[in-house]
Length: 249
Ligand code: C2E
Ligand code: MG
Image (cartoon, rainbow, N blue to C red):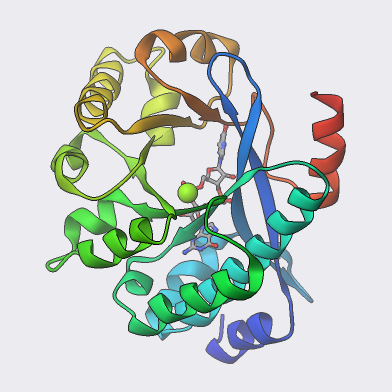
């Protein structure tokens, strides 16, 4: 993949967002969505973010990419709001964005033109924050001062110290732990450890990667208040989400 190709993708609107429902536990009521970027490549078809987000981070294009995602997600959330659905929209950030002074300014600007912060959630990888020699705690605080909620994403037992001290509202427990916890006692213990740390801080906990009813059945007792995963729905384009919503009301 070449830098200019990715740059073209961002400027020529080859990127698109899919939205994955996040539901309340145990009601299964839709509360919000996570925006997940895809690249509609002219020759290769839909390309996964796992392929091009690392590239965007390595080349500095992550600033442009995140700006695009943020704006697109906020505009979509306004469309839903107009249709009478107040869904929160969670956007994934790179830690690089949190270190970028332009990013803070861009957030303020975007909020001005694209609507208030009440429905916006930003997600940052717990692992990336844990590894950062100078973690951007100030920017997370700034987001929360603006009324934007912060999610510590993809958390595992190793990130407990992050959960104990970083400014945040929500913790998302890693898909790896959630899919293993039904058959692997240690994974279950790790999930409990993350939830303990979350509870002590008063953070809400969301389970990612819920794929079966057996896993769903344990979430409430463990202390999760939100869930997302293929059992509920895969990420989908906005038009499909509208259909999904009307079928699940
Ligand atoms: P993430 O933030 O942890 O997002 C959840 C990923 O798990 C998504 O993959 C989603 O499709 C997948 N997933 C959800 N439920 C299930 C399930 O039940 N089973 C399985 N097997 N997978 C499930 P996706 O869309 O490929 O995104 C991968 C990662 O790429 C994201 O992980 C996030 O770290 C990154 N990413 C996606 N969009 C963006 C973006 O706009 N900006 C940045 N910086 N990163 C992004
Ligand atoms: Mg995420």
